[in-house]
Image (tube, rainbow, N blue to C red; front, side, top):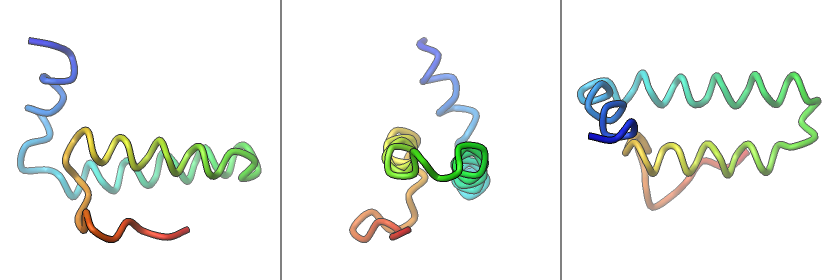
Length: 64
């Protein structure tokens, strides 16, 4: 069992909390870097949501 599989298993049933954590983490990075890397952070957040299946509306990603 890979590390990612273990994380996905722990997140089962808690997708909303994981999504909030991804948002908070991205916001913290944006704050610390003065939003210098905002587009890269947003891309990373989207990839995490796709990997963990936490995106609420897959057809319409959030706009920043």
